Image (cartoon, rainbow, N blue to C red; front, side, top):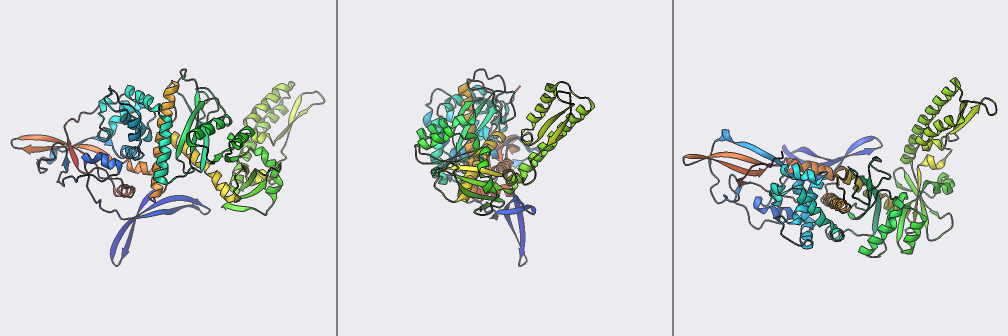
Amino acid sequence: MFLRKNRKRRDGELYEYWTLCESVRTERGPRQRVVATLGKLAEEDFHAGWDDIEALLDGRRPSSRQPDLTLGVSGPESKSSAWELTDLSGIEVGRVREFGSVFLGLALWRRLGLHQLLESLIEPGQEEVAWADVAAVITVGKFCGQASELGIAESWYARTALEDLSGIPADAINDDRLYRALDKVGAHKDRLCEHLMARYQSWFGVNFEFLLYDVTSTYFEGLAEGNEKAARGYSRDHRGDCKQVCIGLVCTPEGLPLNFEVFAGNRTDVTTVADMVEKMEMRFGKAQRVWVMDRGMVSEKNISMLRERKALYLVGTPKSELRAYEAKLAERENWVEVQHGVEARLVAHPDGREQERFVLCRSTARGAKERAMLERQMTRLTEEMAKIDAALRRRPADENGAVERRIGRWMGKYPAAARWLKVELVRDGEGGAVTSLNLSCPLREGDHPTLAKGAYLLRTNCTESDPAKLWRWYMQLTQAEAAFRTAKSDIGLRPVFHQKTERVEAHLLVCFLSLALWRTLEMWMRGKGLGTSARKLVEAIGTIRSMDVSVPVRREDRTVTLHLRTVAKPDEDVSLLLAHLGLRIPRGSKLVENVVEKTNL
């Protein structure tokens, strides 16, 4: 997604306006589509300075207008004249720091009301910095992609303008304080989840008719001996050499995260469903909601459990269940086109149960993809079998076990092709040495309707009779998958450096809150007609920097250097994005006295 500046000449006068565009794939190749016409950048209706930071973050109008001075100086010296005799050759710019991304993250944190909630939940003690403020720093750090609290304390915080925005001095941010803040926040996980649910409903009008559930994993750096849930299991990150924990996430169809649970790293997905359903019902009631899950969560035990709780479900099914519907896949009637290249139809339960129905789907693109994947595996497996055959023809093998183990090793590497490729050992007489291999494949183009059509099967007890609507409900699972991608790519969910169980769960809670900021931003953008590419927006706003400008001025018979902290004026396209979101950054400068940067030796 990108902004494009357009020019149009009418009646001899040149007009300029902006459009938000995105690249899309079509049958004729990639094309650019206009998402929204943003018009021309309008002037701000009020000016706000550094003294109005809280109002700007909260989206409120400043209580008083800043004085409109030439230098725009605000702060302790704002009452003095802004006109000075300046030595232009001595002006310097220093301490350039990240401003835009941290300002956006902190604005989202405050507009979700998380600062007020934590202030009310965490009892104040003798701490120098409020724990709610430290929690905001950690979460904004995760929002900006910081992998660890140690990295935030050692270098990242000093490189950003959070000291000005949060009011926490750079020397007050250290790893011990951040770790203790994790412990304080981790004790209030349930209350935070309930608060987010209420905020989603009041801000975006989200209803909770559908709950999407999926599971991912994240791995540890280190032995994780102090974590009772750390274990080796199926790793989605392809890090089977590391211990891990599994994370079950419940979110809305819009991708807004509602709750999460941490499970042992060696726990299978299907065993987590009952725990998650029970916990969600305990916290949010037993109102009838549709649980949407992929086939990795499905078992007869889980389906029975959902029925006993009178819950509705729409789930994927194992591919083996498609065999009962191969004849229907070949039929041409009673199909509904739910999307270009995708068709669906309702079919009865194979056992005749009336309380359940199945949605049979077939996709042209998925069929082509599955055939290509199988063809690739078949080609590679056939090549390896040909090598074994050539070796046997040169030198027959007297020991059958060695040949069979070699064949089995390659078939285990390409299991999809191994189901179709038939391998027969050819011997030199009865009981003689193996001299060659006979290969045969009964699978031919069009022989297998399930494979040829890219078919899959959905199972539901919903009363909805429109297969297109049921299919769209199930496709909402992509939002849960997108949430995991955001958590791992943008938030730094992996790897985990903490070792203790409680600290790890608190760390994952902060990642969950940061994910809530990301998905809230996407909903905010959608409401303003700016699409849903939050990553592009964060990158654009992240170009805004704050800096200190050193200005030597002549006062009476001496020269004084003024240090003015200011925010660079954003480019026109970034200013347009800020204006449409209703975000305003401080204008003018403030006089600062201590400009010594934090150094780490």
